[in-house]
Length: 454
Ligand SMILES: *[C@@H]1O[C@H](CO)[C@@H](O)[C@H](O)[C@H]1NC(C)=O
Ligand SMILES: *[C@@H]1O[C@H](CO)[C@@H](O)[C@H](O)[C@H]1NC(C)=O
Ligand SMILES: *[C@@H]1O[C@H](CO)[C@@H](O)[C@H](O)[C@H]1NC(C)=O
Ligand SMILES: *[C@@H]1O[C@H](CO)[C@@H](O)[C@H](O)[C@H]1NC(C)=O
Image (tube, rainbow, N blue to C red; front, side, top):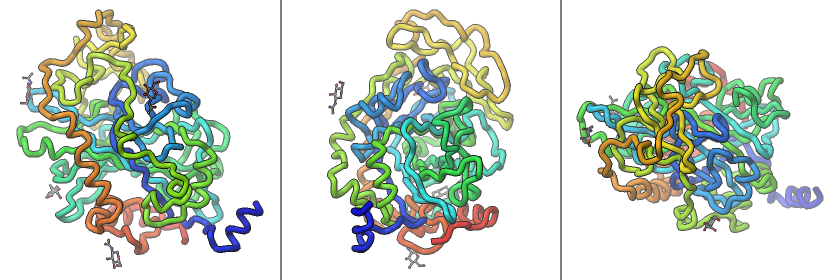
């Protein structure tokens, strides 16, 4: 306390303003697989995820196992969290699927407090979910505003952020965006639906927490790059589909499993005051040598506990991993939407995997269709890949990210299109006031006002 007071008196410690934030760079997936230890602990998840962060990710990941892990694909050594969203596939007109190259993720850590609130660090063991994989239309709830897509074109006019796949012809990639609920009940680290221990503040991405969830934690927002441009040129009548069988984009969702060193995160929350978003401007990380090198990030991988599905990044697949059926909506999908006769992959330990393992909570109680629920498939037959052989080389997955990241750290052009949305809760000017921010920002402000003051 004395030290803090001294620093404060010396003008070295500044209370973070509502505009302060940092962008955590997560260079590449640590794993692409049917893994979701929040929704489906101990077994494969119904659909595949692209996971960045700690290499301790697997069916049985816990806070302790994350903390004990020895690497991450994200930048800060003291952050062994796991961050994930569904995989994105291209569905060819002939019905085959191919994974869309993933360009890495930026996780924004945003100081978003309502008047009188203090931003807090995540409690140890916190797990948070945002979005609903079963949606195939926009319910237009406050929560659904937290899920958006943005078509990225560094050289053209900024495209609007949309709830679904409005425009997937994007020269510099299609960005999946998930804003997580920032208000915590102060008691539960998780809940049966994985959601009710958390809530959104009254402005969804800003504002005051409800009295039931009075702890305003640091807000997180994912930007996930998908290089759809690899497929745009094909013009072959195909479409983009999320791994949860969603060709609309409304079923985008995100998961967060806290793996931070709580002392380091608390100090960062209390003292990282930069409004640039540049993580190197945060003294707790930069002055204390808390960054992984790019080589260390790139050398980090988690073993895949599922075999015979999408192991090969460029593979042509006959079905989505887990035999998930594509459902157009507008009605919600259900856990029963699996491809008939489809044989899913197997766990590497030899345990057969059910197709479409049931997620909780399903929108309506429906049984997984028979015939695919209890397969007993020998490992060598459990391969649903039709014609193998990549047409996208594995290296595509990492090549362009360096360029994007260096742009993010300096260049004005790129920073205006890549970092616009979550940086300025009040819409006031600043370094990152790219023109792309307008659409969703102004819609939110009309609906909710702007309860934040600087
Ligand atoms: C992390 O641990 C794994 C398993 O023990 C080991 O194979 C790997 O080399 C370690 N990585 C680093 C960066 O120490
Ligand atoms: C579907 O089309 C893609 C792209 O031309 C091709 O690679 C794949 O082999 C085709 N699938 C089948 C089952 O013919
Ligand atoms: C989609 O975005 C691209 C890139 O900015 C743009 O050139 C194109 O006109 C957009 N298409 C539609 C239908 O909005
Ligand atoms: C942000 O807005 C200010 C004031 O309108 C302007 O001078 C500046 O060029 C803008 N910056 C960007 C990156 O668009």
